[in-house]
Length: 240
Image (cartoon, rainbow, N blue to C red):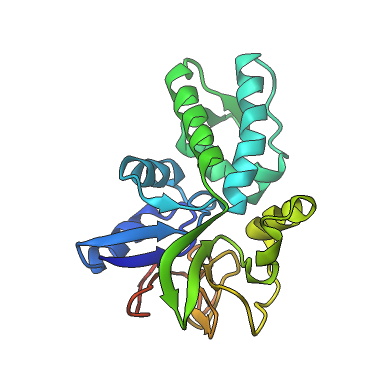
């Protein structure tokens, strides 16, 4: 069975469906995180990945939803105001929040909807699922004689930190937020996303960046890509 690593989807469910239509039938999809935010159908994407039990690592946008979402749930249950200046909501999270049907825009202001018990439970369950996602997946596969590791941001530069207690926090931070270049030599072949690429999937001797900036409108971006580990082929669709 072939393994296809799929870049940051960011709420673009329709593009994801078009991508799956182009992929072979018998595959193992692996998501690099950032399933959510910016696009209009984040809830649908999370449901699709969860219901099919697809492999996925946690992205920085899932991390932001976990942290902010818990505070929002608490505010709703205690009938307190929601701060729409929240870091997550201001960075694409509002689109995700809206997809769960918890708020609406009325008379020029955001207001909590009434009778949101079912919607709130779904939101809470998805947050719990995101908390269970690993920071990386080390696969029983190799490229260029290096073990394949899938993460959201590149971890090749800090791979040795993952099992060192005092450095574990640095590893966790880099796995979500790292935008530094991959070192020319590393112990792993790292497949990741997080930093959008305008000129196609970026490849190196020990890495592949599959993030094509599906939410961006600028020239060269606006694509959703999948990279096959076994064949190194790239399949992509336009998100515009």
